[in-house]
Structure formats: structure tokens, C-alpha cells
Image (cartoon, rainbow, N blue to C red):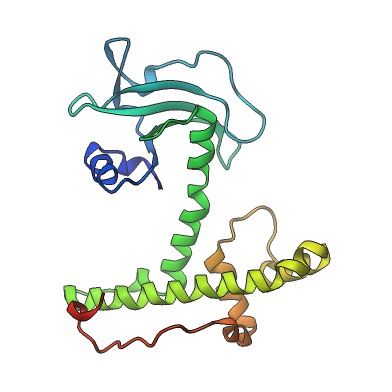
Length: 229
């Protein structure tokens, strides 16, 4: 699991550990870690060498297994990596994890978060979840269940379509380019395209893609949540 700086607290780390979930989370530069017996803010720790690269995450600086968070110490693997943001400027990622990885591996794993984040934003906007204004918790839970089902259908359909087209795409670059043009026409420059966004746009152009779905169960949406496993 990967998460941004707002989630880098010890309480969440303990919860993920209890579920045996491996994670890489970006921490705030003001958080203190214990290095050589001294508590220091992450942003005050220097890189051992100039490890910048032109593209992608840098090798960075691996601090090792150290105590994280002075107010509630917790042993974690910690690393620092220099990376370029979307504007081409250098920034530093302070990363924590509950499993051993070197700095480059931790940065590479965390970098995958942005694709997931884009998909999450697209799902909220395109499926209407971000527009929901529901005060009753039971009604909200019911709506969330429907949203989760819609998301599951889209992902399942996208995987089915991808598998069906995979052979042709790998063998014929023109097929790949044509499929992408259907989704990305009139777009210029570099942009993020999530699986959810791509599938919704394809369905808007060709509703026949729904036939790729393979239904395995019948859902009783009138059932109470206490009877749903």
C-alpha cells in the first residue's frame, strides 16, 4: 500500500502491521527520526552523495531501520530520495516502510501511487461519488456500496477488454495507437490517463463493450447490510 504525507502517522502504521499489510508512505519533512542517538527532523538530514538522475527516482539516501516519530517512537525503514516533479523541479521524498527496501526501490514503489491516485479521482468524478450530499449514514453506506459495485464492474470490464485485445495490441502498434486515439483525441502534451477514465470513455463510444462482462452472481440490492457478507 502507498499513501501520501497526510497518512504517515504511527497509529496507521500499527493498524497496517496488525493486518500484515506492507506499505510505503511519504512522511513530512518536519517529522523527527532518531539518527546516531539524536532526534532530527527529516528535512535536516543531508544526502551522503549527489545521487540525482536525469529521469525517474534517484538512488537517494537509505537511513535504515530507525525510530520514527519522537512523540511516539516506532521502528521503521526510512529513506530519502530526490525526484523531479511534474514541473521538472527537484523535490525530496521522505519515505517510511515496514519492510526492507533500498531507497531506489522505495521511491519506485511510491511513484506508482500517482497512477492509483488518478484512478481514484476519476472514479469519484466520473461515477458521481464526489457530488453526493447524503446526511443519513445508512443511505450513505448504501450509496457507497453501489459506487463500489460500479467501480468493480468498470475494472472487471477493462481487464476483460485488455486481455481480449492484448494479442493484437502487442503484435500491431497501429492497433494500440488507434485505440488510444479513440480515448485521447484532441489532447495535447503529457497527461494522466487512468484505467477508469479510459474505460468510461470507451463505453461512451461503444456500449457493445458491456458484452465482455461475465456475470457470476445475482445481487439482491434490497437486502439489508446485516445479511450481506
